[in-house]
Image (cartoon, rainbow, N blue to C red; front, side, top):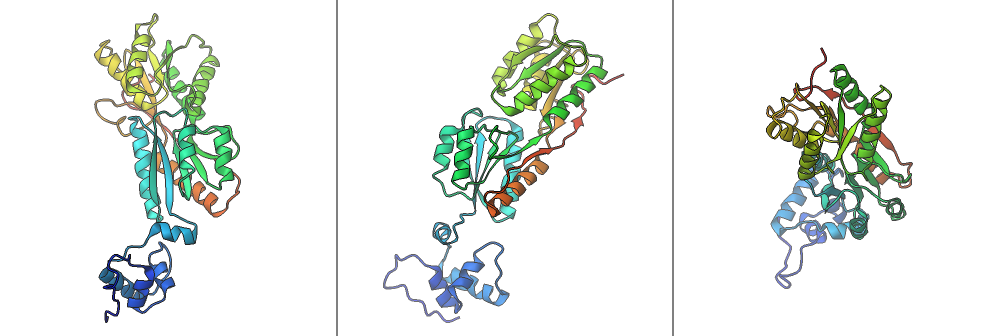
Length: 344
């Protein structure tokens, strides 16, 4: 291919798609299609464009393109700043799945899970095609503002009272019922609940299901301590429960992270035999739960299925603005390991 391009008069000028098209001998729209994921262009034309772009050192300006297409191919992800391994898995799954569809993520972190309004005010200034909130609460008025700004939003592992926001959650109620049935079958008598953040829909659903289902079986003296989804607070809450009289022989924790903290305290500070003297059960089935050191009995929230559902819902809203919000519940299963006593 002959080099007919001359930038010597203005060496600082950025190379444009027009320059690539001129050198390759193709239309500018062909160059644009080549750099657009999923767009169609002939193999012969593609080779010309690649050679010309390489020769000129061309890289497409995504910001400039977004002004034309009204799409940035950026999906915002909001994630709380904590050490929960389950959220790390969710983030990895989201990044991989979105990348396979030609999207990149812009990550926003929030110090807490119970109030994202200030961060959301900032996010609304960014040119995003969509937004996924992982374990972060969203007030109704901010949810409505996202809708007014045509920003599709999906909440993952949480839900809101607003009717304008879609959500994907695990089956909290059914999961807790299966956990209680399992513990009752193991002939436990003294039950306790290690609670998460009281403002989260996840904790509210699991706590209400646990207490109400146990009461339906005639068990009303249920102890409770607040772990607030953090490592240190969960350890202290577990100490409070294990010092009480009567000491619980079954502790259900609102997530695996807190269950692992409780398991560590029970075993190393109170010398209890896990799965015999006391049963400790979590919720999520994060990757640490199966480690030999823990062998945590838990109810799963299948991350891959939940991520796939969240992306599907988000894409539907991106393609059809004003579509009806969806609230999807993904089924999980009870994973029985060694941290809880087996029924006889």
